[in-house]
Length: 244
Image (cartoon, rainbow, N blue to C red; front, top):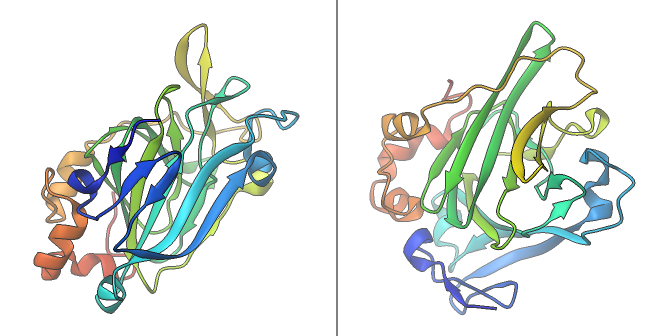
């Protein structure tokens, strides 16, 4: 497997090699591998027995507590290239109730679904296609799932949030988000989760415009900007600071 230098995209001294995030300078508190049994409750087809591994999460990346002291929590997630039946491999659904998040695509490409569902009459889903270098802001209260739609390359992304933020896995009882991303007749499709009887169609959103309005430069890694221009990221540390 080819070695991928992730430093240009992330601003962090990390590489992806032999299916692992490798670093000599950084530390992480926990490496969590999510298997098919760990995500089964959120799959379109719950009877599957493969693929075994869906994604791996390296939690709380740091370098001598530099980021912790700034109040920034960093996670790195690697999503395998594969299909679970007809559904593309994905993360579990997570939601931060009070704080926003930023994700940054370090390698590969895919789809990010953002959802806020209060009732059949009050709900919204955004579909964001993403590729290397792209940054996406997730407001507080929005559930998020990241999908790897490439079958020959790992999707790797970084997640940035306040150390005060608490993100939880959600929507197990609903079998995940209101929509699944599948491959059908050699084409990519977004189909409704039958547990949601009434739900609005996914909307597109100009994420680049939103990112820039929050003071983020598109081509520079997030962590470099956050350290150099810390004051521009004050909204990341405030509750309910961002809305679409």
